[in-house]
Every structure is written in structure tokens, then in C-alpha cells.
Image 1 (cartoon, helix red, strand yellow):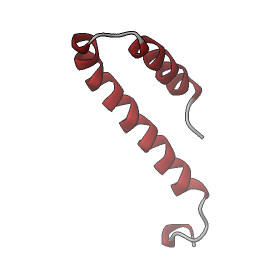
Image 2 (cartoon, helix red, strand yellow):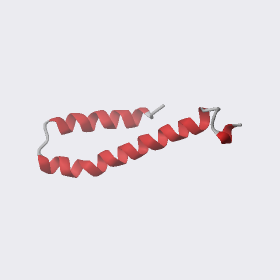
Image 3 (cartoon, helix red, strand yellow):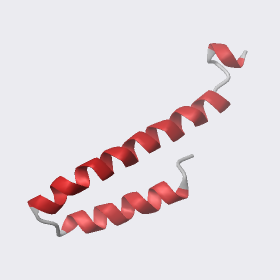
Length: 58
């Protein structure tokens, strides 16, 4: 459901953040937020295409 490239990026960011200091984490917040927005978009598109109970799929 979620693009594999997004999953790889999230894993890489998590590994970087494990040993990071506060300044680096501050810089990573926008990157993590962008990843969350992309994941939300992917999930919504998946649901729009596959859920038969939603009004636009009838």
C-alpha cells in the first residue's frame, strides 16, 4: 500500500535519528513531516481506489 521508497526513507531517517543531537532532530522534523504527508496521500489514494462502501465507488 505505501510506496517502498517511502518505507526505505522512513527507515533511514529513523536510523539517523537514533543517535542524533537536538539540532539535527530539529532539521529532520520537516523531512519527517513531508514523509507523513506522502504516506497519508498514498493511503487515501489506496482507499479511494479499493473501498467499495464509499459513495463514489457505487
